[in-house]
Length: 377
Image (cartoon, rainbow, N blue to C red):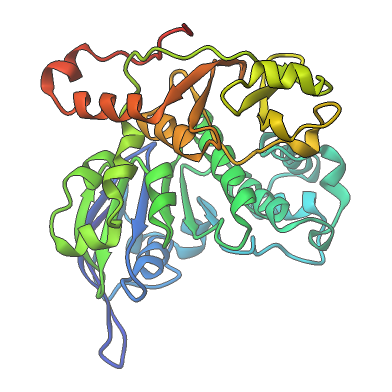
């Protein structure tokens, strides 16, 4: 647990970066700090490992006042991940990961073994061990940065916008990998981001800070979206917070529409027979959806280049937001639903999801809702 007790940071010119912050980051949970520029997010984070010293107040690591601890010892016991990974360019990937274990006195053989273990854990091949940072992509470097922070198995990790410097696709992959790791490791994590969507996806609790480092609201993502404490929080979370909030509501039982699917290589006649209403769904040999086609535009056989891939896919045990997005983003306006193995289960219409949203707002409907979509009809 990390606890802020009336923590203040005032700079010599009188600027108040953090003003009387009281907050608890629970053990084994992800606490995300968000807020506008100048609200003291990074300052608050760096005061935990004393890279910045508080002007007043106390920060506790469990039952220890961090001000009474040796700063170097404190930092070696806290994982720290920043933008652009911050790797040493002249050291191999294995050596980068082993940095803190070697500082703690581990022998080289043990430290290298730990490096290789963590390479696999963050989803990188062992062949990367002897490469240098410049030989890796930005996303791969960020994975190494996370591995380095985990190397000495610290109970606390500080993460300062670690995924903001990569493209959106890689960023989502890194977020998913991060959540997978956290489910296995259960670290106490304080995570700084300017992206409210990232905060909602990753955080067990979200701390919204005002300019001057004052806490505006601290709550779990679902409560934050549904009950912002004031206009400042509501504006920061965004005007589409109602739509985001659907991401925390599981889909009740819905009747799925069956579809006549086809495969790549099907003839134009087969495509037209399957897509009598103007669209046909293409699946692979295992029944996983690949995309939609317009049969009337097909000449010869169905090829991958003719697929419309714009629609998202929702899972049978997913959320109302995912189901609605699948319907709205689909070129056919029929949302594609898959089972736990990614196999096509059926489609759903937007109006069905909207009806489910309306019913979910009624207490009786809430009590009777289930987590799974109905089977295909």
